[in-house]
Image 1 (cartoon, rainbow, N blue to C red):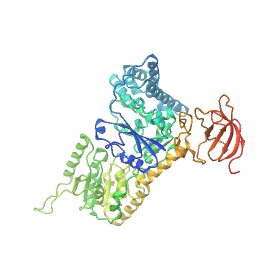
Image 2: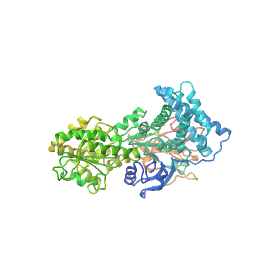
Image 3: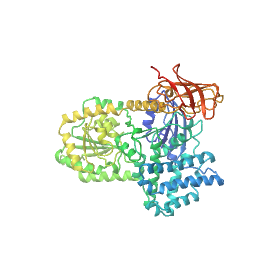
Image 4: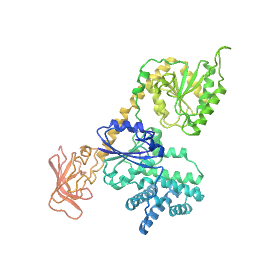
Length: 608
């Protein structure tokens, strides 16, 4: 089948998010054809180029989300009225206070309100050639102001000033840029069999539009919930935060509502999605697939590390709470004077990461002054800060091999990749109870509350003092990781998901050529696979004349591909009159309506 893979700031860019996961997915599903639709986040990302692409990638289309040129589109009176209606409805939906309190049918009404406004803007962009100028116009700001001042608006929205309104309008223009793209023609996303969004938010927006225009089913994968990311990164005054949070929450709810399937990466992400309105029946947890082969030598060999060495590996930033780890290590040194702590990682991008690393170095120097065995010996600090690629740590596997116990001290965490890598290496772990840590570690490691240096120290000392327990936990952790978190299980899960979604989706009009003849391979074979899981619907191909043949799937309780052999009469809303046959046998006679159900039918199920 043909898959439209949707990314934002990710694959196929060299510095993209989740690029390794996307690349492994595409390479692992070599039987499918992939079209990549990528939104870039910065000019620097575009200049760095792409990673090498496998042959199953047939097309790559990109668009900058960080910049948009003026489209030069000048709306006429009718287009301006359409924009005012759609954008005004969108702004009213975002600013309304009643949406947060809506339940049941009222919640559906609010969702329909936001969705209809969003698709109204998409239709306007398709008809007029873009939305950029309109979204940047003074009229858009005035409509946003009117919605904020309307009765029943959010309290924070009513306090919005002109600078706040300009900030929100600029953010909405950026978030809605995918609506103005030329990706939705019949030779673009409208021609794929399935849209797979590698994230929610703006990455999934093209999938929503393709579903609206062409009926393409949408699969959404979130290993980090976009709404949660927005909440953590939110800045600005209260009105700006409130309005942008409301917009992203409604966009997330619409994505979950329209998606055929949503695949969270862990139970932590799943809970966020359910809280945002995702239907439990659509959720299927698929853990990220990681390459276990590069850790095989460490995981399968006997432990050769210093039995008193603790290792922390990751990106150095405040969320990792190395301050608590250093205070915990001070407690550990009182019980185990031989203990050492190796902190391996680079600071996060930006001045904040470098400043945090400097603060951690200063604290380590204060807590652990260089100690020397004698007057003529060189002092040594039990805490070291290293980076991958240094002589003592040539690669990631060697970093994990250097420690008897791997520690994770985070206060904020999504899916703990470093923890899974430690499990692949057969290392016992001590982790804080954040994010998906408990789900990942199971019973193969020790878990303590976050921001509790004493509990962290006691757990580490317990493992340092018990080599046999360390070995048991390490072996169990490696077995669990190989069962749940490998590339192979991830690829197989998505192979099954693709098949299930397509088998439940009706064949869309468009699989015929200009003469009305079926296109070779225009419909994936999975769409015709017989079975009880196939949702039965009748499809009427455009341009079929009386006496032709219609491929049909009719809810008669009959298993197998059905065919309507059309008779010479076509009446009003009726598509064809004739016999329904399954695998060469006549099973019913009747009239098939354009709504997809027989007016009357008499017959037997196959096998009786």
